[in-house]
Length: 251
Length: 375
Image (cartoon, rainbow over all chains, first blue to last red; front, side, top):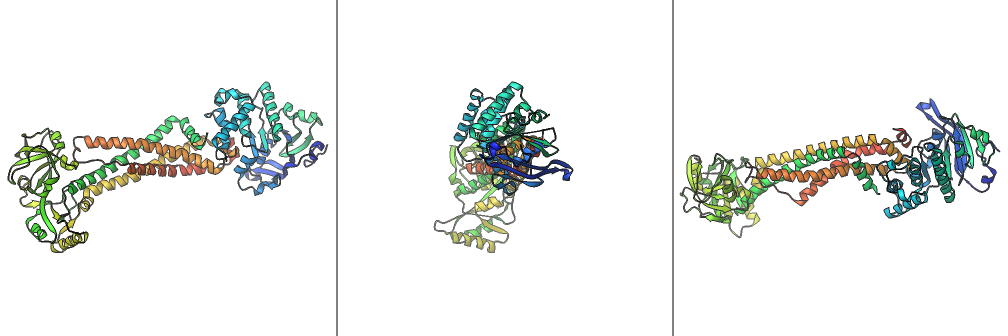
């Protein structure tokens, strides 16, 4: 196994091209006093499931935010396919067309039904209301929420809420899903169920999944595990059981 | 779910705040509707009264801007006017607002030249007209009869002199319907203004052109210093009361617009501050900044349109109520029209956009990652 983050696992490199390339990425706050990311290099292949692990404050969520264009890097460059992030004029449009977010705390809008929460990202997009509604219903059915579409988040269990959030992340047909501890607020049964659904649907649709997690059982399912420490990638860990002790060592 | 429904949903989250904001806008709009409709109605009712009489030109003192122009001695002026080309008839009119009953507000008392053309547009519904210029009788408008509780055969006391009511008439103009009418001679006597009139009404012959009317105006200006010949519309628009009420209505529009915009501004700014995290979520989900602006401005426009709608209804109610209170009955005739209501709603939209613009801009500039960190 190589420790070069640009070198992909053998079974991936030949078959898939990098959808995401990160080079020398830094993210500083407070005029450079706080260094959230401190020189990150990473490639992620199309269709790959990459788990990012590391201690709290190691820069996992910051990395996810920069990949998702929610934060602007201080230096370095990212490429989505061949497109450099620095050349993206409309980051909102980029997110809408390419990225789906799943948050730990669901971030559903409490006054909208499950169905409307899934439809929200389509507002302002091409296509009719009817088409958006039909796709939202189809996703919710696929995620086992046929009977819960009209319910408001307050009436849904944690697992159901996260399934609504997954449907919402997928409604605009993104190429990459960024999940920030999606099972962090769930009990183990719900966590397994949500993870099964998320990884299943992502694999079925050929999407790339980058997931921040503290849960060893979650990262164990990833194609590749990347450990972060002090704003850097400590060691890219090849999947398929290469170094289970490292994975297991994640706090 | 679309942008409009989402905006509506956001407003329904805080029903108390939404209702208060709508009420504040509605109050301002109601004041605009009531004052403007009354100002227009006041102007229109006087113009209608002048037009109904069939008067082509009115001669009055040039400097007079009162509700009724200052009285002047008519005889010499009348002679000069009668000699002008195309002038068919010149008749005087005297008007005073007088108290004729202790339990009723003051009413207009008109004195018109006996058997002149001024009387022709009135419809007698009961009794008869005065039989002679010197007959000490009055005919009263239907509304005045109702207000004063008088009928044919009753007596009314004006300035200490008793007059018999010999007839009741109706007119298209509310100011005439609410007035008492007697011959000019009687009006001059009872108001102690012998030989005086407020205005002289000129009726021209049938083949008079616009150029001829302009010529008459010029002739009056040259031959009668201190006097002016104007149309009924010009007389009303120069009227001080009409001008003051129009100025008040314009000032109210300005104040209501400013207050409305500030109320919307405050409400939307509070709403945006409370929803910072949610806006962060929307941005993270790929909402464009323009869509965030549209959402916030949609909410502020919905608020102001609702306020406008309620304000129109309340304003119409206030104007109707003012029309019917004893003090104002027969003096104003509020005017409402669909174009006016559309203008008011356009004003509401403008104040909604103005009030919502900065909060919308602020919301659209939020950095998604910072907004998502907000609790």
